[in-house]
Image (cartoon, rainbow, N blue to C red; front, side, top):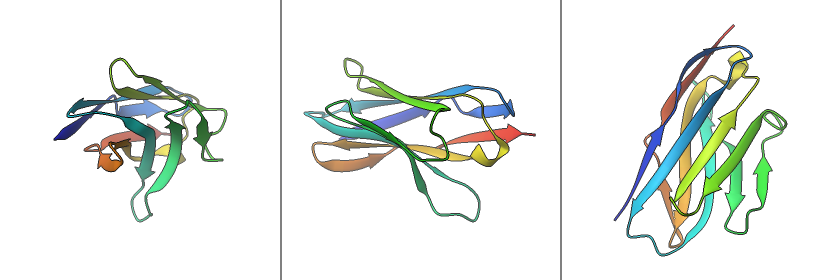
Length: 115
């Protein structure tokens, strides 16, 4: 069994910052990849940022230069630092970890950016 616990969402004004965390626990042999997705009302879930087991990162064009994904492998935790937030970043953010070659999703955390 693997559990993911997300934290760090909230309400922030445009231009502000938030940091999301997602910690994995349980029967973890290998973490093959980590990432963050988001889903806004009426829209499909989309990839925001990801990092491979080798440390290679990739970002959605809409967040490049504003968001930074990082990880602490000793804590099985992935972070998303979000700066210069815009109202269009408002969504529920989900972490997704590939652990032991299975996909696991966090419970989701609401991020709301007011104009």
